[in-house]
Length: 352
Image 1 (cartoon, rainbow, N blue to C red):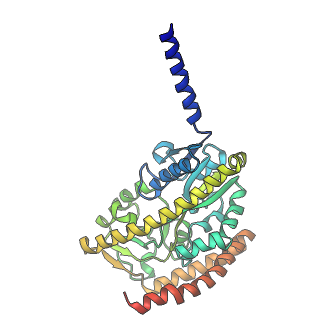
Image 2: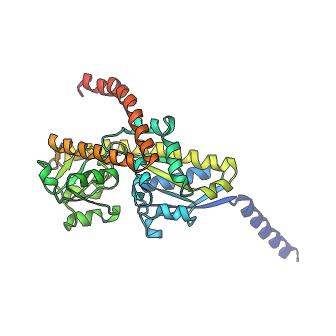
Image 3: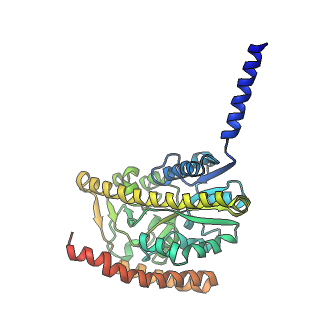
């Protein structure tokens, strides 16, 4: 009898312990990338771990990758509908849902990563982003930057604007709209399908990220020309939070979720910079046959003109678009003046 009573008490004690240690808040998160995808995907796993640690185990987040939910570009709808409490993706994937979401990833000929972070967190950018997403019952927070992106991998050399006519290229966001304005045919393809599309000739060119991720994707094996960037000088990922769910949480939990996203974003940005530096050294030493090119001056001029026309049209489209564009332009004017006399002058003066 005593033996059975002791066993029962042990079971009860273990059950009580598990209840005490169980998370008070359980959330589901979906992201756009394959499971374990470097930097983009792994940063989300780190986010979930950071939230658990900062909340002392009171918040648990179950992370589902694209392998699980099967919809790389479905994050907006997942979070809006409440199917998932949190999402992580790039805002410019959802221009078809709301064209004003395009502004919050990156802009051609726009801000560098540090300039853009300052705009988001000190210049009113995040407030504008949340104004746009509030219409959809979503709250957002910055989630990590790739830093400067390369202009892409091309099967053939680009010598003039004529070479862009009919060119099928994977390029999302405003970059894709600008390319369309000079005669190219932009498309968007999930990360896991890019190599095959380029290899089979479904597309003629693609932009992905830069050395941090491009090298491991193997694009250099099938596209000999690698162009420097113009379209994504500071590509920011974002965390999307279901607003109804967030409003139901205590203030401490909201603070943990938002600040962990911001901190994870810092960590991802640093990792992107580091990996690009390491992989660029690998490219220059181990793959000398990669032809690194700048776009010709007339191509850049045409792209810039297309971008200007696009922004003028966007300002006419909606009041919020006009306010976002003017906010970015005004902030960039001041920020770039300091960048020019600061970082740019430093680099010019020292040579290397």
